[in-house]
Length: 425
Ligand code: SF4
Image 1 (cartoon, rainbow, N blue to C red):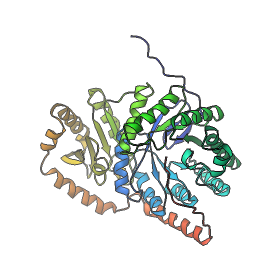
Image 2 (cartoon, rainbow, N blue to C red):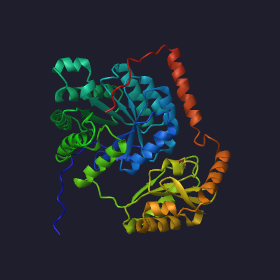
Image 3 (cartoon, rainbow, N blue to C red):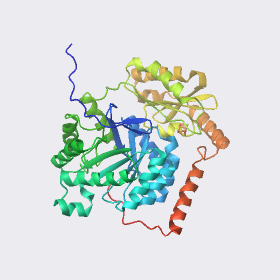
Image 4 (cartoon, rainbow, N blue to C red):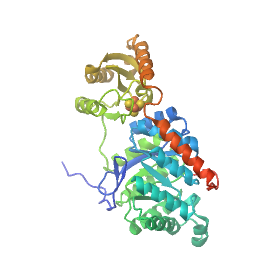
């Protein structure tokens, strides 16, 4: 067999950590997407995050445009299977609240958050917490002064915007940075990233902004992102589609697989991060399941969830999953509980069900569900909810800190809002 051809030597960048996901350096190119739910809708956002993760995203971005969104993040973060980046446009308070909520990364738009003192304040707080920031320059919301100076949103203007933001970050000795210079015009985007790659050694997040609905959006995104990846440029990417974000994640993953930059997936195992509600050692069960299912070559999304209270709902997009509670395992198919098994038999039951799905199909296995399973599961959930209460992750404490911070800012007369959040590319 001929040796595999490499698409390009990757350009060496510094490495940053988004939670446990490395970006840049010799890390694999990471896939990102962005939720479309209101971040204050905790359950809806989590369900979308799980679906995005199952489709191949390594990182997800959520808007943090209002106090309720920051409070939502405080509840979402402990339960998200992948690191969360908070998207910040106009309001410095929202950046600070997102950090308080525990986000793994921030995205600042230098065209919208413009006051140097505010930019430096956010960078200082991020530095204290070891949280990286993406400087997310966008041709559509370029700083008006730069627009005038360069006669438009040229590649040079986009890169200059990033350079100016880096200069503010340098003043507070903050270097945990990732950069994007997105444009909706593909040749402009490609030229901007080429220039950024020559100018900075920070990791680059690739994307064609506002690409539109598929198939046109997919083609534009692929044209820009693939051209750069083929030159070794890019450490992470997002397709900005006018579509379900699951499609963005899937497209990102498929592009990287097609270019030989990520391995092909057969089994797609996702697991919750485990939190205050966990009833089992999720890492141990997930590695046992990986070992048992990995070689079967069954193309299924399988979810391992730490608790029965939220697990089946959070992972309702997965084909098959198991959640633990009260020394039992709740086996579910597409969110519906089909069987309740003793905790010690969780992995065996999972493997047996995966094989049956491969033979009979999902609909047949849903039809073969144990008719008492849903009721037994509901009783277990109710008992556990009673035991641990509604706030097993102590998110209320964090929310209180976010509210106090907002109160203090209001008392200081620290009014910084300049407009409405409109751009999220
Ligand atoms: S333990 Fe339960 S609530 Fe916590 S992350 Fe896992 S499934 Fe979600």
